[in-house]
Length: 159
Image 1: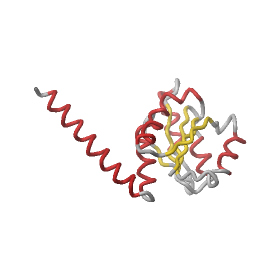
Image 2 (image 1 turned 45 degrees about the vertical axis):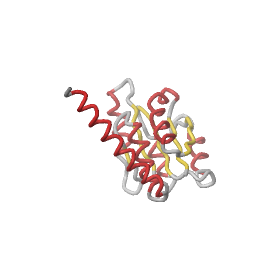
Image 3 (image 1 turned 180 degrees about the vertical axis):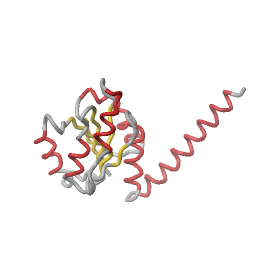
């Protein structure tokens, strides 16, 4: 099982790292790339051409500002694309969110919250879990552990 995480700029890495960590915790191989829809369109095209050869099954596309990366990638493949809008210095990431979520009919992009890297990673795991039952088991365990952690925090708060 393999995912790819593509970011539009190295400045996105601090956010993207949280998605990488999630995938690693679920033992999902992740290829990580820097490809800009606008500045390196040939690299985006080449990446799309080798998705099948590399056995990539889901892509997280992180971009800020005019965040067209997820849409560009979705237009050239039939595997799921998860858009991760990055908060930029302008408009608090609203520009990124709208650029990612407003896709034309026929070019779907699943989109998570602005800087929502953890959810992007978790959504990728859930999508892969359709094919790999062991990921569904791990996801159930993750959610149980998350609930236990919150219950523990609640108990500690109320001591």
